[in-house]
Length: 221
Image 1 (spheres, rainbow, N blue to C red):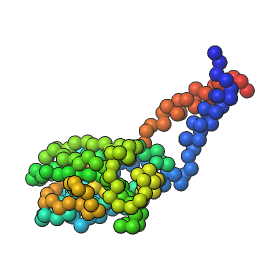
Image 2: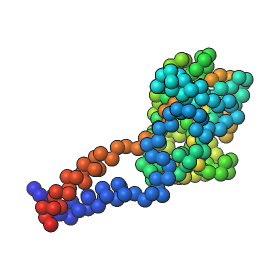
Image 3: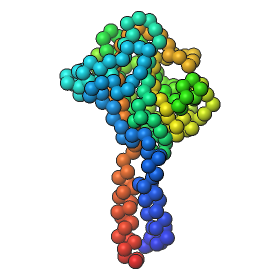
């Protein structure tokens, strides 16, 4: 049975709306892959943060972010790079992926991912509940889903996870064990981070639907 022309036009309009979303919603760099080819890409930390320039996921000539504590102290790093700041939800970001490596001596890490609104301690911070303990001397990929608030814990502030994801000011990594507080927990050791990716689902399905509907519209014009 032929598709009703109004249904076809409505579906096409919905596709066009998604594909032409306002630029303001895409302030964050969608599809970002932070591969640390050189430098630390704006990472800050009270812990030592360096880029060895080799030994990353890509092999001998690939750099990575190395976080190290030579003493027993708070362990973590954060980024306020413009690439991470903005409306992640409006930009279509659904997951965050990254590789971790417990470099040098083996440590019992409980490494976590966090997002915060702008404003520092006056803002809101949410932390993903699952602590990650990467393998010693090799890279492992992890993916954090952003859609289920029950998998996260609010450490400070009053905003919901959805509100934070619509106004991200800082992305963090840190070592933390329960009970959770505003500051990371102390540990002595080193960890490597590489290929941080803000995942946006491919728009292929929407584009395909638009292409299928265009001939239908022409036949009825």
